Length: 340
Image 1 (cartoon, rainbow, N blue to C red):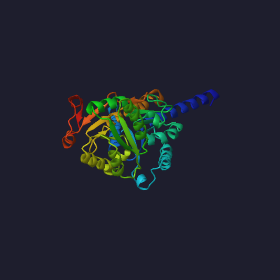
Image 2 (cartoon, helix red, strand yellow; image 1 turned 180 degrees about the horizontal axis):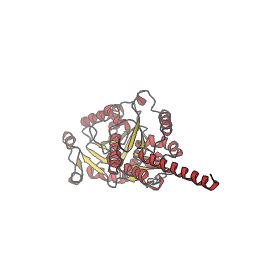
Image 3 (cartoon, rainbow, N blue to C red; image 1 turned 90 degrees about the horizontal axis):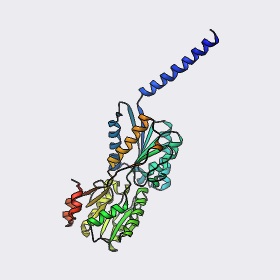
Image 4 (cartoon, one colour; image 1 turned 180 degrees about the vertical axis):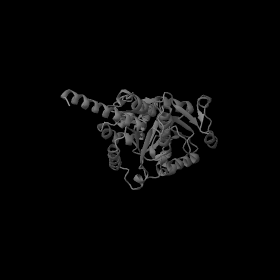
């Protein structure tokens, strides 16, 4: 065989191998890994929205995508490992396993999973999309609109100035609010912003930090003794743990005190009269839209701005209103949905 013919044959072999590799890549399902810390209802709604949006874009579980979910569950807290070091070690370990499986994309749900997993995933060259994050900068993003190299996502962020306006519209005479939160990154950041906006509006926010394993009752009673007129439930996994134990306890206290509970999570939980926030399922769908662009169009994650829900969702619980003998203004009732 002449030298020129041999070179041509080699070139054809290379081309055929490349084509067959591309065809194989197209034939196999896209592999998506999901990582989250704690298994609570809102996070499930986030994943549901994500998966449904992928389906709207032609990516169907069991057909052309394979989704594998890793949940660092409640056993972490029960074992007393919910310290920042404990969470970091668990997330790091699970992230190493995920990176080793070389998925096409990783979805992180919540701030801890995003904050502690992103660097390892991005370094491995795997696109990352997040959801269930209240404050993007608390999860390691450059800003509220820009994530950073190799990742993007959809945020639950809400402007606390607007939240306070809604609270004042619902309760015009309120002057002092109590909020209890754990070291959950979302909650810490949210409460900080809440205090700033409330202070500017003439509302005092009394906050207390609580351990994830502690009962809420003693701390709540202390705040009540200081004259709070309402309680706030922030975006905090503490309130979803142990079958909403803390939320139920706080609701019972509010009933005894005849004071309203206000939830900064757009998700029905025991005892709140007013709910303000972004819809977990909708924000999950926004993340799904980003993932579809990355997988199907080859879009680089960092070129996609962080997505968010344009308008805050508002819900009211009519039954709780009646039990507390509270009447919300018509302006609120007209724009709010009923939790039923």
